[in-house]
Amino acid sequence: MSHSSVEKKDDVSVVLCGEAGQGIQTVEQILTKVLKFSGYNIFGTKEYMSRVRGGSNSTQIRVSSRRVSSPVDRIDILIPFDRKALEHVGRRIHEDTVIIGEMKELFPDGDDKAFNCIDIHYSDIASDVGGAIYINTVATGVIAGLFSVDRRQFDDMIETFFTGSSQSIIDKNKEAGGRGYDAARTLVDAGRIGVDVTAHPDVAGEILMNGADAVGIGAIAGGCNFVASYPMSPSTAVLVFLAAHADEFGIVVEQAEDEIAAMNMTLGAWYAGARAMVTTSGGGFALMEEAVGLAGMLESPVVIHLAQRPGPATGLPTRTEQGDLQLALYSGHGEFPRIIMAPGSLEDAVHLSHRAFNAADKFQVPVFILTDQYLMDSYYNIPSVGISDTGAIHCFIETDESYKRYVLSENGVSPRGIPGFGTGLVSVDSDEHDEEGHITEDLDLRVAMADKRLAKMTEMEKDALPPELIGKDDYSVLIVGWGSTYHVIKEALTMMNRDDVSFLHFKQVYPLHPLTADYLKKARSVVVIEGNATGQFANLIKLRTGYDVHHRILKYNGLQYTVEEVTDRLSEVIE
Image (cartoon, rainbow, N blue to C red):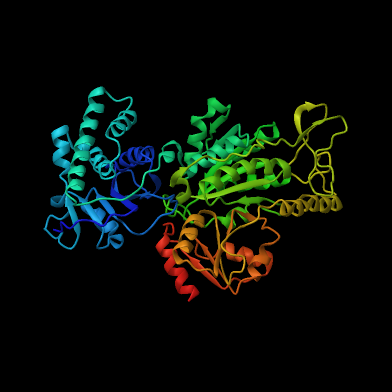
């Protein structure tokens, strides 16, 4: 068993791994908060199996002197809660990885000599405190001790986390955490292990949130006052967030009997003057598609948060993928316009969710917020959420007796009335209709109405968000990404440190910005990186611009990209 001291690092990747039900989430929740309050920059993400008990799940927490917001392959400190954990993350363990755990449990055959191990008897400590249930709190204390967090602050965090439990339970968890903390400090003082992460006092007051929180905050900023959904991972967290803040912000929250009802309720809410959204995932959204077509014919605003996960069917229900771009793009029968946003960061998730409500109201179309499991469950600290001062922009009018809901207009947008706001009749219908909203089978009028709806595309393209260019304007290689690949590609390019490579990130993927083709034509080589099997965004680029990208880097095994993976695959393609 190795007892060599460990090289100190200012960016430390800590991985917790064990079965569902072993309390990894408890360790994560306490640790991330106390580390952030201690002034450390934090990034966290997780991968987990679709089961309540058993299996192997892991959580990565990066603790860094600088801001971090993407996952890495490497493991600097591994806290395995069982033997299976070593197999689950085995390919990521390297010669410098420090494994902190119970050697008798992890290596019953004494085969630990190939690893850099530190033996801490979690179960013995937990038994002294009161039982195996305290093992996870002991482990929490160990990591807190390694990073020298303030002991009083650590105790306060445990007390806060277990608020609602008996004082005896709180005291025993404090004791268990304290015993782990002391064990870690002994190791640090002996030079067995150490870190060199710099704390920044300003970080303590920053916001630590995940993607689901960010989408929810943006929706509230956009004036969301109605949400109807049927729970489906990984989208449910947004429903839970809005429900938790419903009283504070006057939001009506309805857990519908199914996705069909949820979508139709949302359209009814917009018709009545609310600003409404649904939050769902691929399989649930598939049931909503008929109502998406209804929104197209009614010219009703609607905001749809679609959190992607691998399919088809149930697929890998707790994993991540960027596989539903085509689903959002072509959902609903017939032809009608829509907008698709794809946030790449927590800041984007706030801003774009806010923007989605105003765009839906302005153009009277479905607006998608396309996220994925990775973005939903990842978190890092940010100084502020950066909510725009524009707030909720309402575009409906007060009607009079001459009001016509679908009056033909040059830009395709007809004035939208709200029943009861004015003296006009607000008539809508799912069949083709005339300007007043009455059913028609006048075929010439059908063409006029279809052209009117599609005319919105011209204005929507003018309003499209431009892609963000990271790097120099005189690039020879252009990396293209969209959605949640943003931070990992950005950090990978920093590691590569090449002046001739730039990164073009799309946070609005439809309609594409009019200058998209100009960016592509400047490059000697274009590489699209996305998380699906067929290159859906690369295909969309070709469809809309005629430009056929040179290389595609694709991933669809259910896991997100890591910095090292993107760096290696890009280097292969570029060279």
